[in-house]
Amino acid sequence: MKNNLKLGILILMVLGFGWALFSLVLPFSTEMLLVAGLSILFMTLIHERYVFLYGISIILSYGVFLTIFAFFFTQRPDLELMYVYSHLLFTGFILSFWLLLNQIKQIGYEASELRRQVQLLQKYHGETDILTVNEFTEQAQWVLKTTERRQEEAWFVEIMITTKNKRTQQNIKESLERATLSTIRQKFDLATSTGQSIYLLLKDIDEEGVRLMMERYRDKVKQELNLLDSPYEVRKEQVSNLNELSRALGKAI
Image 1 (cartoon, helix red, strand yellow):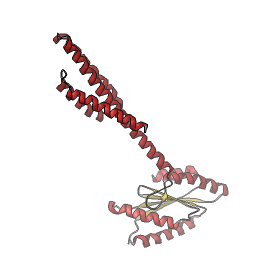
Image 2 (cartoon, one colour):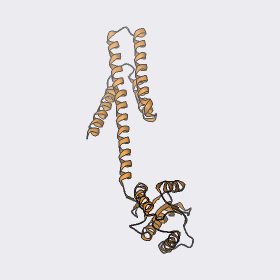
Image 3 (cartoon, one colour):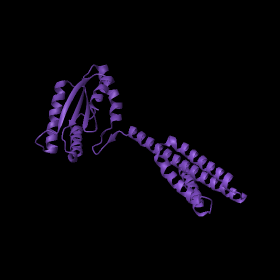
Image 4 (cartoon, one colour):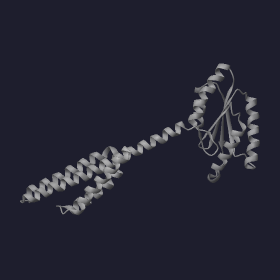
């Protein structure tokens, strides 16, 4: 509500100063409107750290121009007063537009941060409700601590999609995710995905158990996709702590 109020006031200020510049008969009104229009475009395009510097520079430049012109070419005091009004309106327009840009960008930053926090809080993503990478990492810490304390084995598995067809990659990935969730042990194993890979952390299992699980996985994928050639490759390695898992994920990602 507070941001909406600020944004509304700033929009009204920009519109008010713009209307005054356009409707009032002031010295150099055409040139001033042209500079104001170009300033809107330029201030929108340049990096935010330079916007205020540009705004102050153009305001001071216009003020210096009016001062020199009034000193050398103007004899009437009433025209000098018009120059002051012209500069004040131009200053108000540039500063209010700068404040409006700053407020819009601030709202954008807040929205991006909120989206980032929502992603961090999400446990599942995609159509298959597979774990997010952040949730996978959080749960993996507890799983690896448990396996280390009990001296059990844990295995990291990467399933890499090998198909080159961009149109079918997403459909194949969703099918592989469904096959993954129906193959792993729901209360023991973890699964996540990112890009064109699916990652598993298998708890309390040996290498032979991993091989048997991947055979069952292969059979489910064949039923799901009915393809002649396997659309994926598998890489696996044993991990015993979070550092080893991070290195394995680092190789994968």
